[in-house]
Image (cartoon, rainbow, N blue to C red; front, side, top):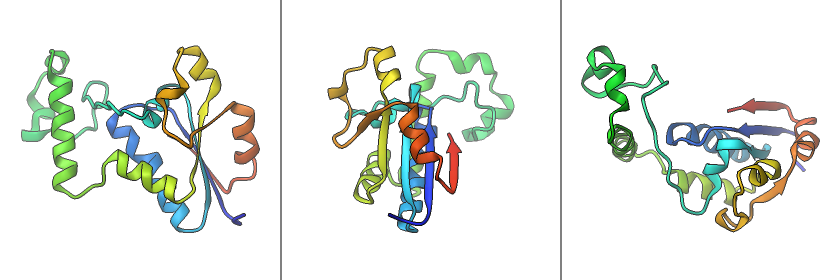
Length: 159
């Protein structure tokens, strides 16, 4: 067992919010931290076998927009049909152009680095999710099991 521990609670299920838990946990594991991510509520989208993550600028005023759209494009128009798909496509293209690893690649890197990934059983039950829809190696547990790990963690993050 490592002397250092990182505990992360992942609650968001969008493309932009998928990166922090996987980047931070894979980096921590590479630095020798024993690492666990507890996926709950919408964060469970990040550990499904078939990812369908999207991003939207709605409710995200800090999101950089192409052509300075954040300065002149009305917020209401961002809710038009097709805008979410366009924003998602643009984000994926920008990530690929800059050489940023995909979520699948980062998730696999975490698995290879023995990052423990735990799905919140209560949330799985609450939303009638099928455990077969999740990646192999994912554990299922409750908040109490996460606290057992997080109680001895050096760093705890809520994402």
